[in-house]
Length: 492
Image (cartoon, rainbow, N blue to C red; front, side, top):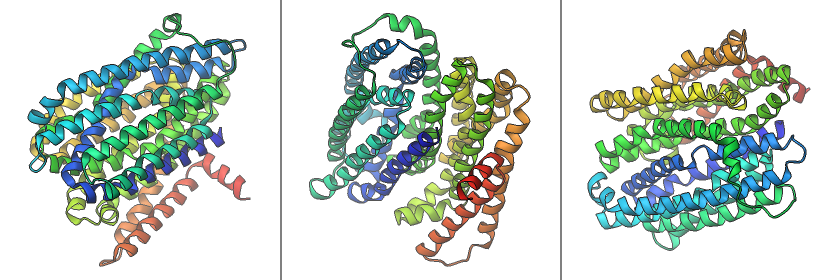
């Protein structure tokens, strides 16, 4: 279990580093408007995750469940082959839909002052190809996570990240510094990545007869898959509605500032998702085995781990957002526009991370109603908030709406989850797992903000930010009992 979490964290940290390290090069070679188009591509890719229909989460749960049931080897193989054919059909849908709407998006939706509509149109067609090719990665990610082969999965992820991020910089530098070249390379890298993931998935499955399409598979899982599909749809809408609305209301340049801040804030999921990915199949196995004591113990340890990993990092970035962006991009104008947006977005994302461990437990029990209803209500609240806040406060208003929604999850959803599955444990979760470790991190970050020297260069600012993070991390660990004991065992 610990090896899986560590492998996921290393893999996510590596891919995040590759993604963020090269962003300044993208902006340098292509320009800020082209980077705005890249931000729009990320939004489109997330929107088309709706076609996943909860299948990646379903296959993860099913393979985890079947892995502890004897005689289910052939069913596992048939499940993967069935979904491969489904994803191939979904990829065809993506290409058809996006190519059909590409002229309208390039001419009517996006507001570019320097980029001609023809370039935008060609880029959107290339986006469709990249999204379609990448779509099956959800199947293979979910399958390898369900089999608890996170070390292999993350090794492949890092390799794909190197080819995808590093290769595109070489293409922009040596071949063509255009947004079209950017997307062509993304399509090539996506194809290589899917082939490697498919080979890894089938290599890990148990042997048996030739795998075949099995329509009966859907009869067994359709309720869970349908609920997950609706939850995924609501989650995508929550995460992308702000960007969709802003891409229309703002110029492509101003949208790029929001897209940059959002990419950094959403980068926190490179810490959140690895923990969730390791816990979800393990919770599923323990719930299937009715190991209630082990579930409670794992739940509290995992919640403390999530707090320690996310809150110090989020608080430091929020507090030093402008300095961090200047160090990263060497662009004072960009940092000034994006910093206040980033501070709000990353705190909201950290709050979302606090709910991921309870969410993993809920899914392990197969209870999706709460997540579904809360997601629908959140969407109904988010859209009016955006139309009220964005015209008045611009991109900062959209970031504020995200913060409000995630605070609501902690206040409303957390007590409901504990009441159903962990009765009597809410106070321990709120104070010992989340509250006190977070408060310790806040206090230490505040000290570093107040005492930060003036007129430091980039190196001095970077050193101070790193020290603030390390100090807040240590304080948070000391205030998280399970993590503190675990660290003591490792050290002594």
